Image 1 (cartoon, each protein chain N blue to C red):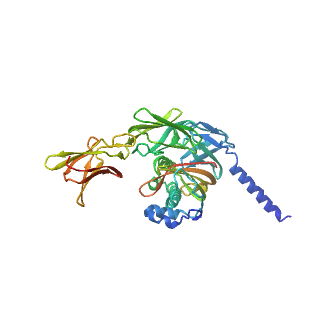
Image 2 (cartoon, helix red, strand yellow):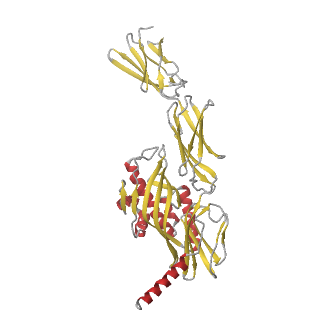
Image 3 (cartoon, rainbow over the protein chains, first blue to last red):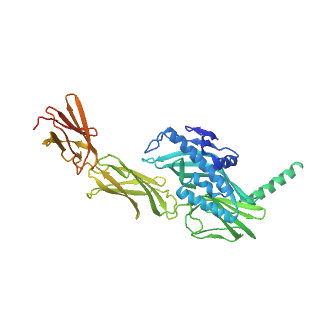
Length: 175
Length: 289
């Protein structure tokens, strides 16, 4: 994963995650997206410590990778590690819908352009915007139903938990 | 030139194939969550439509040449979607957005802290995320009103315009202790949190001394208050110190009904003081009276 900007995320940063999720995520990522992160110096109202900056970006990118695996393998159980609240509920419902239709979808990011726009005064939520390019491939068994290259803007709200930042709101739209 | 003809034919056929595969699936670029809409199709025969996105996945059998109709309940999670219409070996595709409903329906309101001292400037923060009835973050700017009403009926009001679905304010805690109701509201939607405002640190301590039986001196503070006049909570520790002939003895006493009281040995010439936290009270030199 090539990361530019102030944050220098590495695959190594994901190692503490451990377990099956990490293995699945690593195996699924056939190509690494480029990641650009805008400086967070002027984000407010609370300032973001350097350690928070790096863990936030690491956890957000992990959320994308985990979502891809969950939707590719139709495994809602993977979502617990990185999603919470409405975001988790909606993604889990999508996985269940895919299961009932017998389809799988992959979401392979090619690039992320991330800008953190809000860090709440009490430190309980961070909001970021991500201009992301990704490839969607829809499969039914061995048959590819189609694929699309997508350029979208995602809004994500993340909350701190015991172990990492988890995505609470995850909503896409045309830039 | 003759050599180029097969290549030109192949190129034209490829263009025609791409055109057939990628045209004619015309989704509106934006659809409001929970709104019914329809999409025209062209051609003839049966096909299968798939719509996928992180927020939804659905499938429809469609008759080409007829409209594909979507009901109000079909797509309600905001997001970017890919539609693929497959008929045999050919397919058409489109991308579109489901956007949040225009009408806010709920607020996710975080008020922190839940307990703080009185008279703290910008001590209370309120953050409101605005959602529609389907739980989508409402991104268009909305004016959110915040009101902090304290126990005495006093209230502070502020408003904030949301950006990308979030609005926030910072408020001062009131001078008077007690529970305050912190409310965020917009367009008939509101959420309330209770913030407990507690007295601050003691502002000053005044102590009196009286003779007590058995060569003791009775020490008692006046009711201990913070700088806004609120009684400091019972349990707050007051430390009495008696210094006599170079030796100091101390007693920690919790406030009970607003005052601290204890007895120390009555030594003529002893210097007795009282303190709580960083506040030092008056000093008494004991002379037996």
